[in-house]
Structures are given as C-alpha cells and as structure tokens.
Length: 321
Image (cartoon, rainbow, N blue to C red; front, side):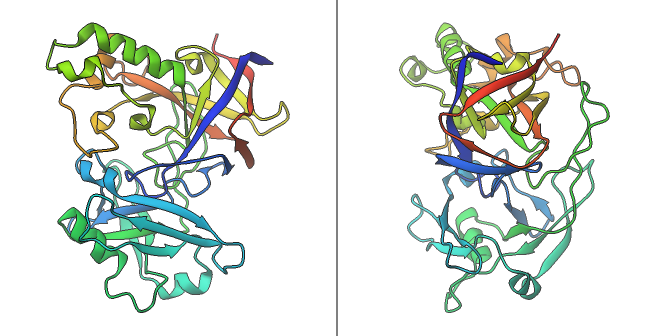
C-alpha cells in the first residue's frame, strides 16, 4: 500500500566514508547498499584504523564526485577536490577498478573500523594519471595533516550485526558504520528544527540558531522521503520503493546517533550542542539496545538489487505492531 503519497525527494551518495556527499537523481542498489556509497575510506597509517569525521571534522571538506564514462574500462572516475584547500590538487581514481588494476595496487588485509569487530580489507588507491606527482594518499595526507591511505573495498565479505528486532539477520556491508542504507524523512528535520527553536539560548545552544537550520545532510542519509510526516519511518518494518513488486527493504533498526551530525558539512566545524543536545530532549529510548542514545533515521537492508529514483513512491509492506 502507498501511505499518504510518500515519495523519494533526494538520494545522497557518500563515496568516501565521512567525506562530502553528493546528490543524484537515480541510483542502483544491492544488498550491500547504494552503488558507490562508502566504497572508499581513509585509514590512518599509524593506527591502521578508518578515520571518520567524528574525530576529524575536516574530512567533510573533501569532495568526491562520481564521473561516469561508459566507454572507459573502469566505468568512469571518482574525482576528489579540495575547495577549501588550494594547496591540495584534485585527483581521480578508477570508479570500478578492473582486476588488472587491483593486482597492481597494494592490498591491506586488516584495518579497523570498530575494535569489537573483525578487521576489514582494501586496496590502496592509485591515480588514473600516471604522470601525477603525488599519489591520492599523499594529497589526502597533506590535507588532513597526518599520514593516511585512500582505500577501495577489498573482496572479503563484511558481516553486519543482527539487531534486537532481527536477531537472525544475515547481511553484509561495505565501509558504512554498520547497515547498508539509511532512510530519513524531510519532515523529521522540520521537527528537529522546531524543537531547536525552543532551546535556543539554553545549554550552550547559540543565538545564531534562531535563523540557522539543521540540514538533513548532517545526518548522512541515503534515501530522503517526503509526504509521510515526522519520523514516519519509525513505524515501518518493510517497504519497497518505485513499485510494489520491487526488492524489499527491511528497516532493521533505528539509527542511534553520535556527535557527527554536529559537524557542519559546509564549514567542517563542530557545534558544541546542535543538534545532539536537542535530540536528547525527544528522541531517546527508541533503540532497545541503546536507550540513552537519540535516534534519527532508520537502517535498512535490501533483499535484492534495484534502482531508486527521485520521485519514486514508497510502498509500505509491513509496519511495527
């Protein structure tokens, strides 16, 4: 069934984990997520850990852009630019590296996203320009002020955790924090901003928020919806998008939030209070496994491969009872 004419209003892809996202009109998806979303990550060479904007807010100022080219052996390139850092030259890496390219790249078989989980694997990316003076890793190291590598996901499957609602969940992901796709409604952001206005001037929430708005991009969703009302996604268990017969997307959990949404995508600066302190006022107690954390958006696992388009209708198959 269609619920209140809910539609897809925006699709966001974040090619390099924790770097700037990009809006697209259409995207393929698989059980591991939106095509090219978090297919790359940046690791700290000294700790062998994946870096995120939680500890390095400046990462959101790195801008990856997908440039498709059907005539290319690797389908196009991922071009990375640094609008806020003129000392860092842009570079491009293959969008879908061939087996021959991957054989030439160095693989790192074990680096860490979460200490409590198995290590991940990946290939150190090289530029498509053979005459380039600096490698992608060197350029990123210059921007971030520490030695890093740009990694492309390796072949080893990455199992994700079951949830309280789905204790038998068997699924895999790429470099996402955990689950393949994040779904969030525009009206949810409107309610966050309404609640924010009530608290301006309190608990470190600055007066500038009387006119500023919390943008949905801070929450890094993949599929943004409109038409269902605030946090309508909280009520759903299973949906399809575009047609009733499309692959099921199972909403396996609410997304418990850290301080990352406090980082402004445009400036790379972390606000000391917004939106986290606002969210704690009305969005806690929703995740059985983490009742103290505020939740915004729902994590989804696709049952198969499909395509999502801006304007697609959402069909709700099962709701939480």
